[in-house]
Amino acid sequence: MQRIPSLSSAQGRSGELLATVEKTFGLVPNATKLMANSPAVLDSFLAFGNAMSAAKIGGKLHTQIKLAASEANACTYCTSILSAIAPGAGLTAEEILEARSATATDRRTDAALKFAAAVLEHRGKVNDDDLRLVRAAGFGDAEILEIVASVVAGCFTNFLNNVARTTLDFPEASPLAGPTA
Image (cartoon, rainbow, N blue to C red; front, top):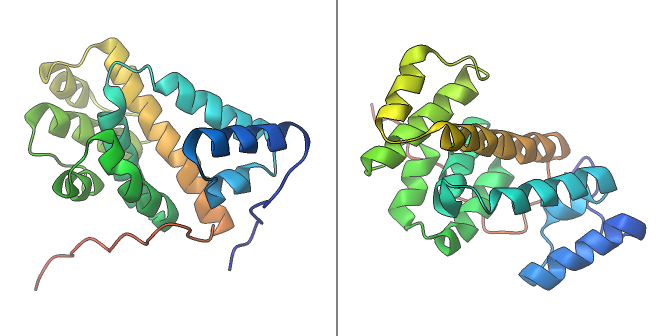
């Protein structure tokens, strides 16, 4: 059961922002309705997402990183919604599953996902080898910062939805296959 309500309607700034989301995407996900409880939270989420749309790493890698964070943070809501919308960012079904495991067939993407996983696991206190490897894969300083920002964007929604236990309004992503005995 959801512990913090998702607002079906809102007034003031939250109402304006929800209307913008609906106009832009044709629907308003429960997570966005959850954020509407605080206009500051919803506004910052939308502003951050809008700013990241201009990131040099691109929307595909941004989505892959958020998928990796969502899986690591056991956020069923975010993993499910990201898996549903990821094809729109150019991800195949295989790439979605790989991203959830912080891996990729593409060497450059794999390096970015491994770096993102290290950022998350070590709470940003990555070692020099982590930075060397992501740089060796062709990522510059701006892109490295964007990878970190993508991790943070994923964690932001993961934590909100895990706290609220937001009700799924997208098909639930299947669990990743575990190791076989």
